[in-house]
Image (cartoon, rainbow, N blue to C red; front, side):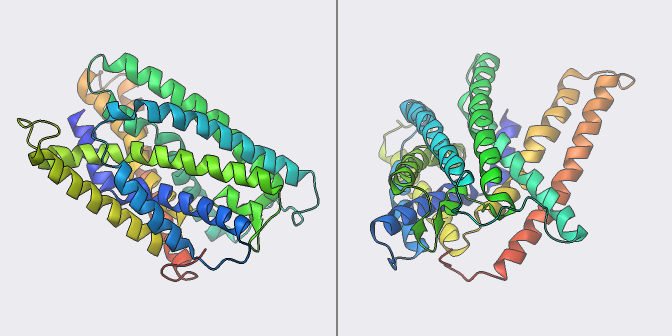
Amino acid sequence: MIFVLDCLHIAYGMNPHACIDQLYSYSIASQAIYLIANPGGTIKLYVFVLIFGVFMMTLAQMPSFHSLRHVNLISLVLCLAYSFCAVAGCIYLGTSDRTARRDYSITGNTHHRVFGVFNAIAVIATTYGNGIIPEIQATVAAPVTGKMFKGLCLCYAVVVTTFFSVAISGYWAFGNQAQGTLLSNFMVDGRAIIPEWLLLITELFTLLQLSAVAVVYLQPTNEVLEGLLSDPKAGQYAARNVVPRLLSRTVAVALGTTIAAMVPFFGDMNALIGAFGFLPLDFAVPAVFYNLTFKPSKKGVVFWLNTTIAVVFSALAVVASVAAVRQIILDANSYKLFANV
């Protein structure tokens, strides 16, 4: 378990990736609400990133997962709410003539398609693998197996329900023109193409949910920083621990906020995180740990099956990392720093 936490530290570094996606999604939702209330408004996307970054700095000071238990429940309800609202918006547009003619073909030459496939695999790994990160961190105390299994079952039940419904309805409504953030498709030239009340409710649910989930996904790295900087002999709220906690978490969120404002590549960041972090952690590392812990016979099927899984997904992680970095470079050619995307 300690090794897995070290892997998390390596995969996430000093925290920017843990909050970049939430910062960017929050900013997209905030900007949409702003444009609904003030069509033609001139406030740029990075301003909303900075606003949420300051808000997240405050929320990040919650000391432990135990203090977030009610936040998790609220986050779950909000996740279901805005997902179903997004599906409703897609159904509305899919049955109307407000969208351009839908094209379901895969664009680009063979070279671009191959890299696109590996990039998509990395995004999927992030989508379906991110639940294991807080579960690992939150269930170190015994009994580990029962708590983690129940938590992951609930996590994947919600993921399958929400992600499948949104992905299927979104692709049906927009085809290959669907953007990395589905809600961005509901705005064209700064104006809503679905009923404004539905878009407003969806964006509000998104804002509230992101405020909750961002804090949860900050906690694994916060715990690592806590272990490095805190004094276990002092109290949780002693000045010796409060000051390092305040400074380290503030700096970490500030770093993530700066990156999110400068380089707003939501899908690309997801792909990079999935390739570099979730693919090896979710597939390769467990197989290796099983062989090291239970030492199955090298003549048996189990040993070679685990070895094959570890090798295949390690290679996939390397290729997907290259594809993700390539996509970031391609997008960087069409964006400027602090772009208003």
